[in-house]
Image 1 (cartoon, chains in turn cyan, orange):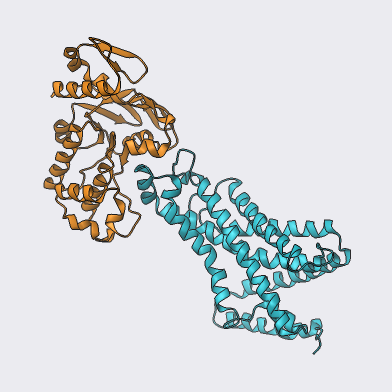
Image 2: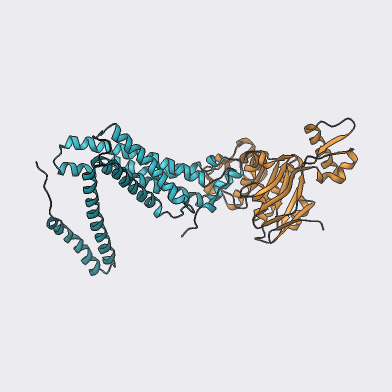
Length: 266
Length: 247
């Protein structure tokens, strides 16, 4: 079994399917053709550029460039994790909370994987570090984003109940207990779902990729298991840190609910 | 009535501060001591304050100092949106504010906020409920059942889901929820608005019982008759200014 190299012509045949999407949109007046075109173009440009960047990184194999690429990825993940919040924190807190927790969770778990399970030589080999970090980042980002969104929206909605508890002498952690538990659940739910469905409903992209490039399935499965465990750990760590720091920021030392630290609802 | 207040406050302070021989020494709440024989108590009972609001510094609120004695009810009145709820929330420390407020001569900031709110408990006009079962909201279930019954609710209502309660039932149970914790002072935001006459009378009876047990009550009310029944002093709030109405 051999790896089948693709030419850009082969890809163009598949791209015809997107053209069909655009024609459907025109035919049924869905008004989506512009968005389809923009999204397709963005995807093509971003992926081609990333291919070039990765090519350069792999050739350089220098710790500095690998680290820089990792930091840029984390900065984007931090921004995306809070980009579509309904009630983001005011000022730098929103971006700061997203980025610092993404950095902490994904950084810790990636370093753990590189120094224990995978152990490439050298350990910063971008061929391992960058894709590993990418997969962990994407999922951690989702967990943090969902956790924070649920926390802030629920705290604003449950204001009467939270302040009733505070007024009766509950601490801020007791008063926010129901809300923080709900936020943690929604942060963790996607990864629990995908662990349950993996292999039955979906074949994960990385495993499929390895099999397509000629790796034996049982090796590909082991890699996939490793990745899923890393993602689960990082998501839990990131959601927990983001929700707890968020809950601390939503209240103050005198155990008051501080909804004034959230931007008004759009 | 005045003598009764004086007797209770004197007894209360004798318990707390050992009197000098022959005199009864009273902490005024601001560090000063005031010495007097029992006959002078009646005239100055209100100065023997359990809740002493010396200064409240919060945006949209200017407050003249006032104090509540043990077992005293003071009614807060004023137009809607004038800042009555803001005043109660500031005393309970639920909104950011820099204030000098003392309870039994102890500064608010010297206590952890949850402990302060256990002693000086705010009951909002619109009650909040955090669990599905009514009974899960009460610290002392038996005491809550007894108080609920005195307000015309069945004791079994503690087993109901919160969704089954009417607005008026919620309002009364929110008061019960605060009372079972035996606070030193209650900050009530319109405790009888929207209640029928029987229920409102039952609430007033319960509040009088709390007053008889030395609880101080600061209460927002729009009903002058109710104010006259429960309180001898009134605070007036208009456009964020709070002062004692001495008419």
